[in-house]
Length: 311
Ligand SMILES: Nc1ncnc2c1ncn2[C@@H]1O[C@H](COP(=O)(O)OP(=O)(O)OP(=O)(O)O)[C@@H](O)[C@H]1O
Ligand SMILES: [Mg+2]
Image 1 (cartoon, rainbow, N blue to C red):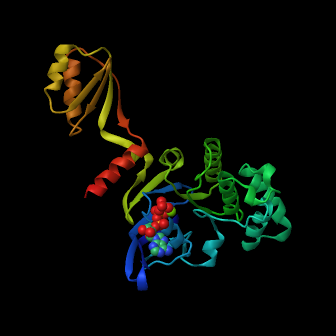
Image 2: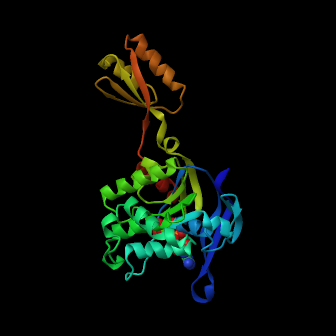
Image 3: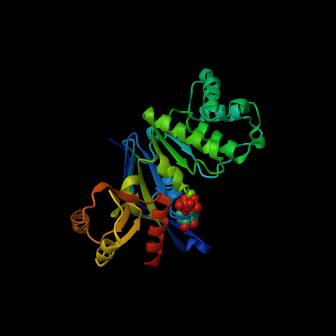
């Protein structure tokens, strides 16, 4: 079963004087997320990422379209009971200690009173706040508040965890700890949906991603599907290419680049690969390995956005 599925989910906000201005936050978003995966939603500021999560948790309501979360239609209590949520830019009462904040959220989730304290301490330790449980949260740094937010989102042992910019403000070591924690939760069967700008982080932990731009999904796929440059190859040769052979290869239409015994080639069509290999082998040069070149998710994202915005 899918952990969540949306069909043509659309949200228009009304704002401005007399609410006359129509803001299209999401337009016909259809996404499907499998149970047990870590799914990343990426997109520039204002793309609609937070709105998407708010719709699924009924913090705001769709203009049109439908969705199910863990098999339940939007708004059902059974849905909310099984979800954890770390909101973007959250605020907790500064006069509460970390453990009291956790107890507060545990009570909101209807947890058994006698188990609350142990659970709070367990989760605070899990997010690296062990020595801070009795400190008032007004003394917490941004990264520490973010860790507390994550602990709070886990208080009801959610099956599906929504994290809106979970590593915002967290230092590199803390980010690694959060990544490890998310991978551990995934290992325990939790489905994780995260919004993030930190593409290198997304690249490290997400199974699949969707890219939103101006409220519309412009790409979905696994990280490898998006970052593999299908027509760019790196061919390792058994010997360097002679000047004469270079000239002959360069007369063709593909783009070639040489470095010692490595050949970088960008084709227009996959069939051209055979002709390059034939020419090399006819000149006595063996092929030791051949790999498709990969780009970073960040590069892919920047190129995609450039193309989208030039439309
Ligand atoms: N309550 C609201 N009333 C009116 N417009 C809103 C409201 N909330 C969001 N919007 C608009 O909807 C669009 C999507 O906003 P949203 O917060 O979902 O984007 P986002 O992708 O989460 O951005 P960011 O990366 O900055 O967090 C934006 O144009 C935003 O201005
Ligand atoms: Mg947002």
